[in-house]
Length: 110
Length: 114
Image (cartoon, rainbow over all chains, first blue to last red):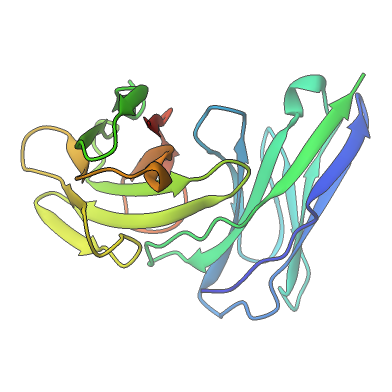
């Protein structure tokens, strides 16, 4: 399972775009990149998943360069309610173990 | 469609007692995963089950911990003879298909060992 590295914390202001980058240098050919969000005292919630290039849904965008050794989660126009911990995971879609690192604590200020 | 249900939400046990944590997966999901989260840390995989089968328990401590997912009823994570170090949040997740993606998590059970 590929190890991921993310910033420990980030601060932002309401209305700004936030980009959280995750490094996964030893990503394997079959691995997908998945991001989860976790609020205090709650279970993680799936945000987005991708394999290469760009993926966008109603919540976020995920940018993956050609070498796939990193990925960037982009949250457009964050609000106070986006304050949470964001986890980047890398794994084989056919696998079953999910390694959650420490994640990135995003704090959105008014 | 109800999400993943876990109960109890909070559980207090004295050292040496047994703790039983229950997880009902989302309707139509046959894959269940258990994770443990210590304060200020990420989730750590414990065990992956399908109905009546333990697929992988490599994250489970060798002693005192066991899990099952019977044909009928919820998945159970059982901790015997609890110690203070077992105090943590235990999350259950389920998925429709196997994989690390799109796992749906329950609200967790917070176990406190006194």
